[in-house]
Length: 212
Image (cartoon, rainbow, N blue to C red; front, side, top):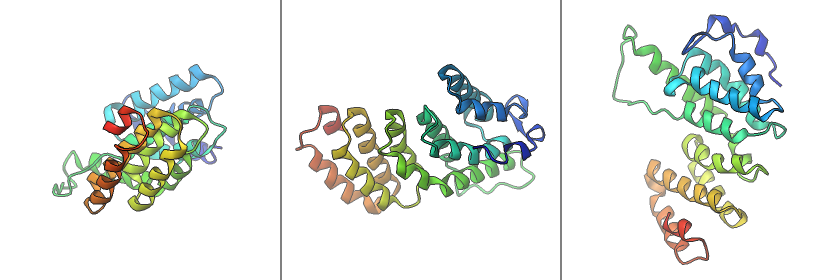
């Protein structure tokens, strides 16, 4: 794990609080066997590398390693990492706004675009997480797929198929909410999703799920 991490010139990259030479330690902390260390590392990632939703050059450099962590079933608490990647990759830029390269916001917009592209390119990893033994992973995967995967039809069918197999009510609700997000983002799928959601109202699911 983390092949090539020491070859990245982290000290030349930045996060919210300056040079990013502490990022390798944070990434390794996410894979720690100590729950407190994992939690501290994730908090620090949000606090520095993805501070208030910002994307820095160090954020971009982290993406391959975060993807590697998500794909490794030996890593605990991967649900939080899935949520982090979803946040990093899902910032929508207004396609009507054309920034001049000299504009101070140009670099920020470029970082957001590169982050979205990088996370989307690796989004197949989330497909295998919908039936993960870790409830937190299953809870985070539907939104990641609905937001980041480029094949909404495939994702929609996967989420619908998971509904009967999933026993956790909150995870089932996450699947339903994710299908709604897909319908809103891909209007051509809206009639199919509405028909399916309408059918759920007559099925033997919990009230929260039926009202979703």
